[in-house]
Image 1 (spheres, rainbow, N blue to C red):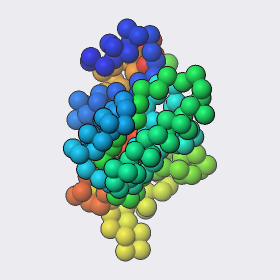
Image 2 (cartoon, rainbow, N blue to C red; image 1 turned 180 degrees about the vertical axis):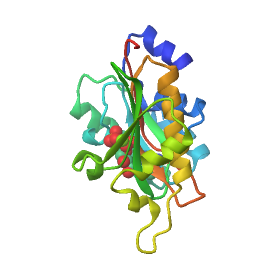
Image 3 (cartoon, rainbow, N blue to C red; image 1 turned 90 degrees about the vertical axis):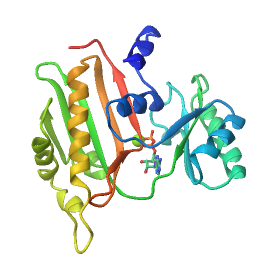
Image 4 (cartoon, helix red, strand yellow; image 1 turned 90 degrees about the horizontal axis):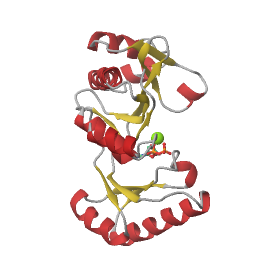
Length: 232
Ligand code: ADP
Ligand code: MG
């Protein structure tokens, strides 16, 4: 994979969101459409192709948690807003981390609100590639409601992983809420497992969040982070 080699040759462990998403996309995992704008005019050109509303995010290998840097703006509706948001994001990033290398701003398609899940992978020292699954936010951070499996894993095992978390009813559909697209999540989990298994130099992978739409409507990673390591 080209992206892994270019990061390695620069001695870089963190792939950017854009690099991480291209790698996932090459592996057949759905990601939100994303392009890097190095300046405002490039952002305006990209916006003509992706269409409003848009999401803008800081693109910097030195800023991992983009929201912490006030580096994410959702629902940009016009060229005027786009220009303002672009400049604001760069300014916020400079204040947050003056020495950060800033590549520009990533311009993305806006996806409508959906149920959010997290799919991740790590290389375990003894067991090798391990995948994790959970619902977003407090479900993972506070309640530690997460399931794990060794990779590679089958679709059936991925479905089991989804069903065994305590929060599963949120996905199955509560009180008249339609069920989420469980099959689409299982497919992402399985592919993430395959990717981590095939590329031991991927030390960590984090798709956070993955937007899950109603049954039959799919699931899409809107943020992704890949960290390279030494390999197993
Ligand atoms: P962070 O680096 O802070 O994790 P994210 O890329 O995850 O940044 O963005 C923060 C939040 O913004 C996400 O959790 C999601 O709710 C929302 N978001 C991000 N990208 C999109 C998108 N393309 N469409 C709609 N909402 C988005
Ligand atoms: Mg995120």
